[in-house]
Length: 388
Ligand code: NAD
Ligand code: MG
Image 1: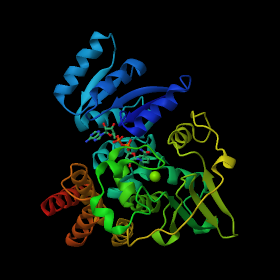
Image 2: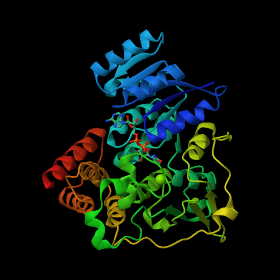
Image 3: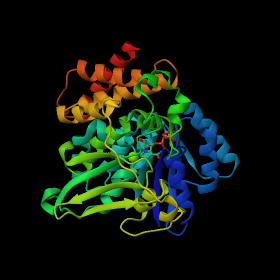
Image 4: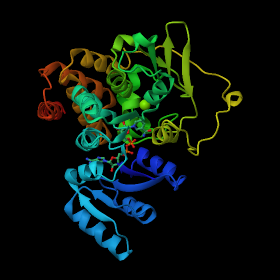
């Protein structure tokens, strides 16, 4: 029986993770669930899964939830804050940690799981983007198992051979093809970008996701973050990764080999597939996802990305090449810009403008420890806020 901590249990990925776990009560038991604000949903999860810990943001929320749990006769202990998240992530009883908090808030708890040598299912791409070198170093040192849950990276992982640390070119890999749907504004004329509303930006054509990643998909910053994520996960450079727009989201990414072979991983766009793959790896379990019906799909389309319309993709590539704290700066600026857009304090096109201005304005530092990364993150947030 594997004990699983689900960080960000009330989110889109968290709920899908619990749905897969629910189908396999003989294999997985929920050790901890965590949430930021949706305490009612978290309480329902406690009733159903009876975890050892539940974690909420504040002490007062924790007290209220604890009383409800006691009234219900549950043994669940309620913790709070970052300390509580880290405790749930690194507890000795835990085998698997699903890292599904959104944004920089996920960095410390995810690193706590990695440092404790857990099997970490990584959905929280922002943590790897912010602190890639430190993160990967920590994985190696602690002997943690890092499995990508982002559908594209999960697809590449499924199509890649074992490299034994030899680098992709040494095992015959020529290119990674990172697919993206192009988001809801793939064909929207550029002069209409300023009028885009948060509701339109969050209505993704293929995937149902949290608000932040939905906006990132619409600006294609998500593809940029994924480009950086792939570089760290697979120890490669942006030159070895081509972004391909594939509007149906049926192929989740591909690997091209030197002999002319291209392997693709396909499936319906449902995050329960990569989640189940991560949970059961190297085995396979059912995920509740329908089989792919190729005849019904009938057609798969591909096109090149348009970096003129979607500059965030270019910015991410530039930030990775600049190295150091540049990706952390870009990520932090983007989190502030997206939040402002969602609250109608910035326009859709402002997001890319703010990201570019902050990235160009701030000095890049050598990320010798987490403190430096957090300082860069804080400064970038401040700078982005001042632009608003
Ligand atoms: P979401 O907004 O639906 O859920 C986020 C979760 O994080 C919630 O449980 C929330 O309570 C928690 N959270 C938010 N802020 C927090 C804070 N400050 N402290 C503690 N917890 C906090 O987001 P999501 O769509 O599930 O995405 C989660 C992560 O997975 C993101 O990093 C995203 O990029 C990544 N991801 C998501 C998808 C998807 O299909 N949704 C696909 C690939 C990758
Ligand atoms: Mg993805």
